[in-house]
Amino acid sequence: MKIIDLRSDTVTLPTPAMREAMAKAKVGDDVYGEDPTINQLQEMSAEMLGKEAGLFVPSGTMGNLIALLSHCGRGDEIIVGNKAHIFLHEAGGVSALGGIHSHQITNQNDGTLALTDIKNAIRPSDAHAPITKLVALENTQNSCGGITLSQDYINQVGDLAKERGLILHLDGARVFNAAAASTSTVKELSSPFDSVTFCLSKGLCAPVGSVLCGSNKFIAKAHRIRKQLGGGMRQAGILASAGIIALEEMSKRLSEDHERARTLAEGLAGVSGIVLDEGTPYTNMIFMSLAEHIEYPAEKIIAHMHKARGIRIGMTGERSFRLVLHYWIDDEDVKQVVDAFEELLG
Image (cartoon, rainbow, N blue to C red; front, top):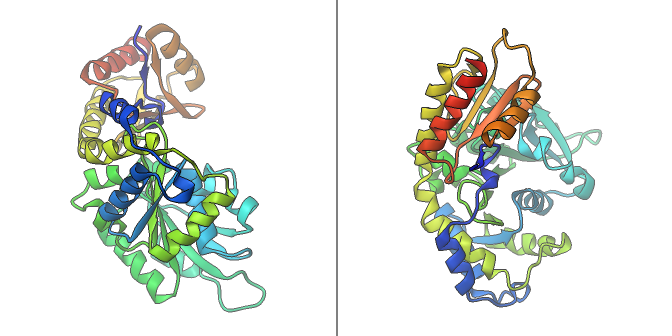
C-alpha cells in the first residue's frame, strides 16, 4: 500500500536529481568557509532574494533564532504575530537563549498584523519598558491557512519599520510558495526585509537545511552565532548540493502543488461530513473541519485513514485537520483521498 502523506510538506524526500548531486558533490570544511558547494548555495540564495550574503543553516528554526540573536540584545523586544511560527513552534528559543522579550499581536484573518496594532505595540522611550527592536512577519502565514502576504502590505510594514527605526525580519519558510501564488518574485517579496530565512526542505524537497540572507555585516555576525548554537557543519556540501537543485528546479514547480490543492479542496467540498475553512486553499495547504453531524473526533478519523487507506493527515484541533500538498502527491493520490473521505464520511 502506498502511503499518501499529507501531514506536511516537511515529509518530502529528495528527488533523484538531488540524490545524484549529493553523491557527486564537491565538499570542503565549511567552518573554514572552504566548502565550494555551500558557498555556491549561499551566493545563489542571496542573489535570488536580492541580499548581499547568505548563510546555510540546519533548520528554519535555527535560522530565525540566529537572525533574532544577531539583531537583538538581551531585554530587547520583538513584535510578532500570535499565530507566528516564531511564537508558537520554536520552543521559546528567542527568550530562553536570547533573553529577547516578545510582544504578540493578533494576526488578522488575512495573516497580516494590522499597521495600527504594530504602531501601538512600539514602546515609548521609557526606562520601565523594553526597547522595541524588530518586527517579524511570516510569508506564507502557516497558521492562517498558508495565506500569502501581499507586496503592498509588506511594503507598508517596511515603510513603517524604517520610519520608526525598527529592523524587519521575514520568516520566509515558504516564501517561494508565496511567490508562486502572487505576481511578485521572491526578490520583490524579500525586498523590504533586513533579513530573511527560507526553507529548502519543505516544498523544495531538499533533505535538510534553510538559508538565512541579509547584509554582509549581518551575515558575518550570524555566522558567529551559528557556531555558538552548534550549527557549524563541516563537509556539508553534500546537503547543499540538494539545496541547489531545490532552487534551480523545485522552486519553479510549486504552482503545481497549489493547483492540486485546489482540485483536492473541490473534491472534499462535495463530502457532506467536511466543512472547508473559508478561502482554503490559498497555496498548498487545505484547512477543514468535521460537520456537526459527524460524532467521532478527528483523531479517530486520522487513525482510520492511516490504517485502512495509507493516508496520513494532520490534526489541528479536536475536530479539524490540515492537508498539505507537495511534490510527492500526484493526481491519483488526490482522487484516492477524496474517495476515502467520501467512503468514511459521505
